[in-house]
Image 1 (cartoon, rainbow, N blue to C red):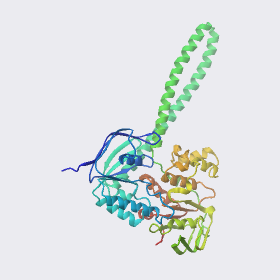
Image 2: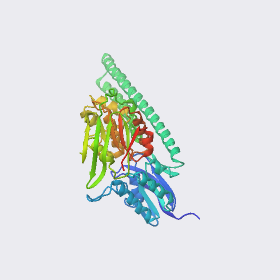
Image 3: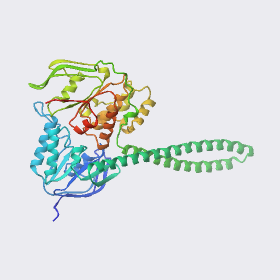
Image 4: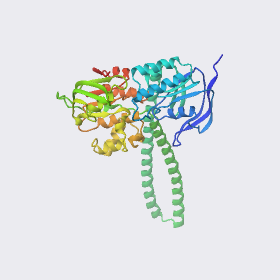
Length: 473
């Protein structure tokens, strides 16, 4: 006998907070024990859909029916903490997840549940996902989480669809779709360019014909009334053609722009990575017997290391001081004991959730005012070379998602003068969508400078081919 339904959607439409349509005519039935993962690029509306399913937001139209108990762990539910709380962000997230699984609701909704979890906590989450009898809807970019699912709800700007299969097959499918969209975009741009070129040619031809016609009209000296009537008819006819032509070109231009906005944000930085000067043997970062505290608790002690073109992974459980270590490396925090030296002109740093890149300036502004490029044309060329959507490039960095900011930060750092020689990245794969994570991996593998990466993502660290690991316990 089939399980009773705990969630039913009929012809549901959902808008973004600003009114932009996200979902139209969505119908879905979920029974107890059924499991589905929501996947899609940042900003496509996964969190908005989760909130609607939980009853926190009302749909623009349609009906959402929930039967039994529900429990939601929202994406940013663990961000609120008191100054006196000893818990890290990952520890709070882990506690909220434990409470959710213990509640055994009929419907369990999890939005990016792996954010901030260390290796042990992530393994516990994956085990709970496989053991729970609750109906599950999980929005996630995490490969380890997604590998525990066989049903995926793929969300895009053009619609939603159900995909049945394993994660690796889904990834291959999404990559193929992305390549097809890029080819379609190029075709549309070529069509638009041809249409605008033809429009300019037609305008020049009509202008020449108009001037020549006036000369001939004067030579034949027709009556003024007849000449005005003829000219009026021609202008009206040509005006209607121009309106129709411009409407057609505008439609093609809008279509090309819409297609471009729907492309996942990716940074093929291999086409624009800086040429680094030869290694000098002089370290960019040097730590000597460094010790760090959090209040009265020792995070780590007597850490010594030297970084120039080294590729180093920093691992350890939540609360072990990984982010603190990076802050000491870049000079944002002083060690409790020991000595830390760094050459900031050779360093590039992206903090966890790219919080140190929450500027009111846009990517374009940073490129122009930071001495990265010498002209607006060069900035636009850089953005296009990186396939970074101009719609995002003109928005304040603070308004972008953390994943989008990570990619924007890497774009800006790749153009900085003098060239960055060592990148320090704190959990760079957090909140990156599937294709964004693949792009990040490709970029960092081709980066020829030094690299220090803090991450719980063991698969990412392996894929980056890091030479050394520093484990904090």
